[in-house]
Image (cartoon, helix red, strand yellow):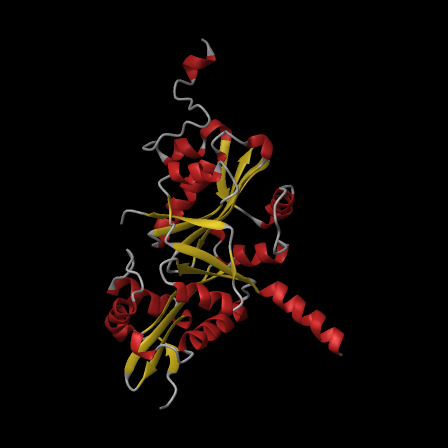
Length: 140
Length: 181
């Protein structure tokens, strides 16, 4: 079977991306709306990547760059396409792009409920932080 | 006329209740919150370096210049008595907002500086379209958790924060290369 391709997400496929996240158990959060994702494909297109195989969206990753630190969000792989190194390829590509922009440190969040996530980030050279994330949703 | 009657609206430092206007908050106890400019950078670096903290990455002037060029209005300082009393980087990457480098000069603590900085940062982030803001809290810092909680932030115990230091890796790779060369 041919390897999945990795490319930038397109505006027209935000619905498929939301479905992928649901299937992969990623999120949901206040920004999981077609409007937010469409905005991201326009304003942040080079850091919003998807993976496609046989015409199907099977993976995603979002890179964040605020010109201070890099962030990785929504690394998701469809359950049917796991254990093929896809998460690693998506991560490597987003890291390459963040590094090219000048990132010197990259942060990623792992869900405590999913042991796989924890193992994955440790295998990729990430160290557990002493910091605890606090979060606030602003009223829209 | 006693001065207290001339200034009936004086707000006590540290009691910055919600609902007050932005103008009042910004001028509270002569603390001014404004965007940082390159002339501030040496003073900002001195302030950050004055803290006894674990430094995994050196803060350099070039990093501040890059940040300033990228989003000048989201890199904030609080000024008090002509000196920089605090800093905040209200990072916005188009998906999430991240509060970083919230710092208050030791002799300006307990005067509402941090609260003013965060309030102004939130206003500016909201204007940019952010609606989910993260703040990383050092678990060993006793006052940090209650501070963020009081401002409406909740600890997210469902996630673990991981990070990768690319500069350290590059340095390690360089040492390895010179050994094997």
